[in-house]
Every structure is written in C-alpha cells, then in structure tokens.
Image 1 (spheres, rainbow, N blue to C red):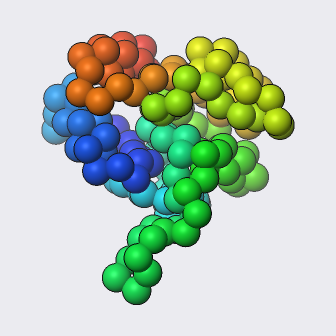
Image 2: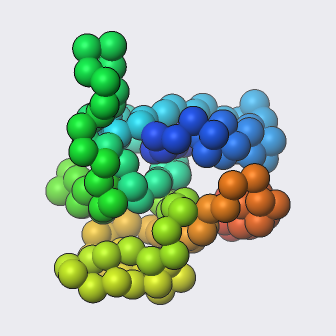
Amino acid sequence: MKQILLIEDEAHKKEEITGYLKEFLGSDLILSEADSVREAVMAVTENNYDLIVLDMALPTFTASCESISGGLDQALGGVEVLRSLKALGKELNVVIVTQYPDISLGGKRIKLKAAKTTLEKKYGQKVRGTVLYKYKSSLNRSKIKTIVDSIW
C-alpha cells in the first residue's frame, strides 16, 4: 500500500489530483489530506508517508465552523511544511504542484523547474518533480503520472 498525503486547500485541485492518484494507484492507495500548514505539520508528525503532494500556497490554519478563514494565505506555506519535515528529521518523497511559475526563497525568486534542486538541498527532501498546475489541463495528469511512475 502506498500512503500519500495530499496537501492542498483548493477543492477543484484536490479533486483533480485525487482522481489521478486513484487512477494511477487504484486499490494500492491510502490517501490522506491536509488543507493548511498546521494540519499538514500535524499529519507528518503523526504518520509516515511514501509520498507528499504539496501545494506551495497554503493557509496557516484549516478553516472551520468557528472561523470564516483559515488565517493568512501564505505564498510560502509549502516551504513551511518542508521546513517542518527537516526539523522532524524526516526525508520524504515530495511532488510540488503549484499554480505559480516561481517560488520565493530567501528573498530570491526561483523558477519552478530549478526549485527542485534548491528545495532538496535546503530542506533535505526527495523532491521528485514539480508541476505547474493549470486548471483542467491534460499536462497536469501526464506530469503527475510520470513522477508517480518514477517513484514506483
């Protein structure tokens, strides 16, 4: 069984990526979800995953009935998750799926394609690939499939 944590706060992206993972892995998939930095950090603290599919822009907290929003939307929320993984001493397979063509690290903008190597070195994770997400694009499916196939 492949245990995957999908960290995504947008419902349409979550639904699309979940569909792909179920298609690719079928009954061999145990899928957990988190939709905020805090929820993601709690999940990786309590569980071991074979793969994390990580959005880079995440709210601080999960929205709940008591609060209308989940706190500030962080353009670097995904970086906070990577930082937490490193602090926990975990080295996991990670796929970055984001709508942004570049990531800001240390005040510098890094193109998404180049971010893989930088994030691996800085946070000690196995970044298996990056996907520049475009709504309902067939490229999303093919890139995620290629990355998943390279892991298993």
